[in-house]
Image (cartoon, rainbow, N blue to C red; front, side):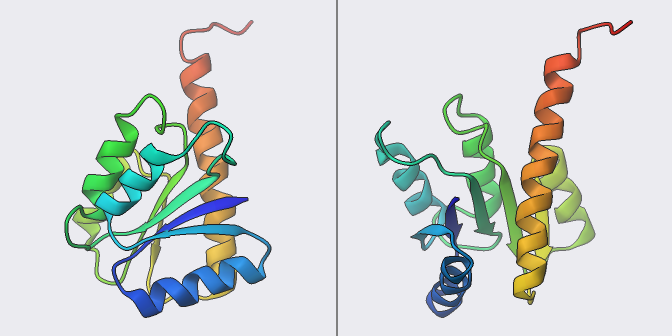
Length: 141
């Protein structure tokens, strides 16, 4: 699985990537939403598909929320499951993220087991949303 990890705290990002790598994932790293968006846009069709994006919420240049909006409005990237991590998101902020189409949210600090559960749940939630959208207009008898 290829994971795009985005966080402006370099030490955290390195530790985060290390945990994911030891669990068998390939990890691409970006230090803010702008860099992550540029990374997505520069990928070639022959590159392995990104399985999930996990982004911090509060970052310079382009916040996690702004990055989420850019990804979700892109016909190329909107199908990538997207999770937000934050150490200080309020209930209202989390609700806004759900309304914007985020597929998963996790609060820092978290364990490696929590991270595995987030990845699994986020991908599943995205698949369920896609299926609902696909079947939305169909009548099943």
